[in-house]
Image (cartoon, rainbow, N blue to C red; front, side, top):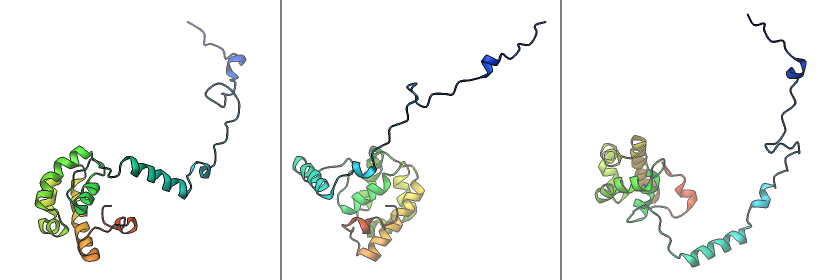
Length: 155
């Protein structure tokens, strides 16, 4: 019968692990302050000016026919691919390309059109609430500023 191995004092004393992956014990370098990585408002403006020169009318992948259908496509694109959204919205936009028409469809019918998109039940509810908010608060038009857009359901 083999005797249990005795604990060797040299094996039980472990050396501390190095502080860095490369094996050195050097302290990590401090990261630059976040403000050092940001652009000034003038620089941001110049960047966007250059973008607009290169591509005056950028086109996204989402298919739409007006501002409302673009907004709907963006709402549906959360947790979904643009290809999947386009597939679902082609038929939806033939039936409802305005907030009034979307509201007339109702949540159940909207759900039938977008069933292939993930989270479709919540998205159908949001599209109805979005249409109601656009009609009630914006006369059926899509607002053209970010502050108003982000207040809308589902955005």
